Image (tube, rainbow, N blue to C red; front, side, top):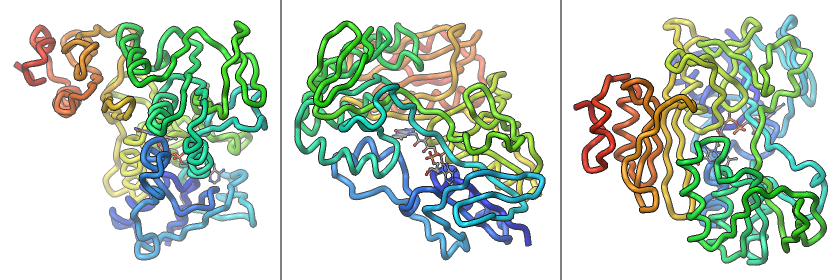
Length: 395
Ligand code: FAD
């Protein structure tokens, strides 16, 4: 009986264990996670869990019934592929097949380490520490107007806090979206009563105050840092497993790593996208749901599987439902559907006459239809796409 060991008990690790059983794997499955909590879902942490509308977000999975051995509160420290063995807190763990699913960890703000009142938002513990902060309804400074920053600012405004978001770029979501698409989103902050300071950098943080590099001082009962995340792979250095420029595990199209019998999936790994012709490192939930099915299929080995998804994610911010499918580059053509100052609109990215990506705000049907067009790679009469009154379909 083969032993599969999965490191990381987040979405990707849990889904890998579940997919192995769903696909009929009868060997041993061990899921090791550093966090002490029952495995849980992260998206609610910046939404319902943060606001106390949900107690927690534990996955509804009966690990015992599935024959999945859970080892929680155990950090894995290293791997010796030649020995097929992990080094973990509490001793070595042998494996026949290893799955790396250690996710990502938030990037810390230099100089903010250990300063009281400075928070990250990645784990259940982080969210639990932030709940009482919101309940105090004081001044909060959010560093970074990315996805996490926007969602946290939304929750903090809902809770009645005074919120200032400090962003180094000239607009929100500068790393993810082009200026013409993201610039209108700055108005969402203002509408929600959150101050957005662009072109602003934190010089240092003092108790109760954030000092910006232009000398201005922002009162801050708490500071929440949301400036991005990087793959949690430092424990793999020296293992011989190839890591990429962002520290991610470099996987192949079947989500295998450079080392035999070792797979990688979720936020910690990049994969070559045949569809987009480049390597993708995706830090979104759907990738941690879909990738594991490929990993499980390739471990079982009866029907080899290639991972070539149309990436998808959503964000709930300032009362809006934002969804994105696909992948675009700055060379793709942007086409608008509707008016970005209105409550519902979408943006298409086209490569020649094919849809490669779509951003939908309050237009879930556009997202669903667009995703199908992207998946199918259908050639389109692109002139028709800009009419928001027409469904997103091939002519
Ligand atoms: P993770 O969820 O990071 O899980 C990895 C696990 O591995 C962690 O529990 C970690 O403790 C453990 N681990 C790490 N190193 C070790 C080690 N050495 N030994 C043992 N265990 C280890 N995506 C969306 O698409 N939409 C959203 O609205 C959305 N909202 C989000 C809100 C928040 C607050 C956050 C943090 C993320 C959100 N995401 C969202 C992203 C999504 O949650 C992630 O893409 C997803 O969690 C990735 O799953 P994963 O299993 O790869 O990694």
